[in-house]
Length: 335
Image 1: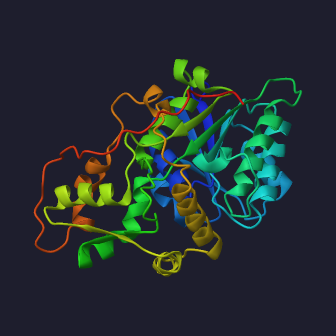
Image 2: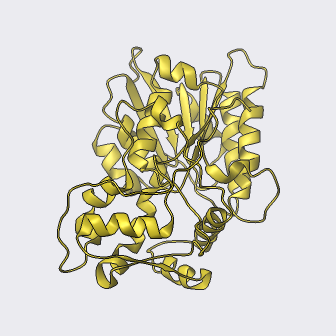
């Protein structure tokens, strides 16, 4: 039952990694009635158990199912994963958001590389068009205005978890970042989720986010060698960075349970973007929405040491590691 004092927020694809983190940042907030969509309730059980309402949407939902899901939502957060039919799938959601007058705020979870400005064939290229389509939807004439917020997420710290077994077994950190000093600023999904929550819960920060585009990165840019040094300090044993070839990285990714070929392609395209220098900027956008400092890579390794630490390693306090200073990205745009 809807509470007039609450804002109703619908997360599309709450069963994705990003969608789930955002859901946990919102569920239980007294100002929010949270609805989460997925194909199966089993994939969002923790959110439902915490108080979220489950909305079942098929991979290709019927228009009437979309209308029912959107009908009482004030804000819709789209958190899609890269799939072969991504563009058509998201367009169906955009059409519904425009059609349902109550929806006033649309948030698209995108990727940092979406502003490359030239066509590519990799899975992330679809997000370029999605951003344009979201902004176009917000410009549609309707009785109540629709505002759009685009959130570009950089390389996330949680991506390193799939390397934890190799770190623990061999004391190596294998990544295909090349030997040219390519850098990325890993961001923690907990920080991304907290920022998005601030963007959608009514208040000054939500108002500031309407119509804006943000890039969310971690506080420091690291090379592969830098990340290995941070891990070494936190685990009390030397971790060696290994610059692996793309074929080897694909083999590592294919060991992940349930991963699709499209998702592997997306990971590899992201690593190419890092090598090309599209992830070396540190954005200040995250600081506008957090009530604390963003989580550092050292904190991430410290909190997850039990998954990564090789045998014989020793727990260590969080310590800063010297890295090369990187340039700052511009403030949010209204593209």
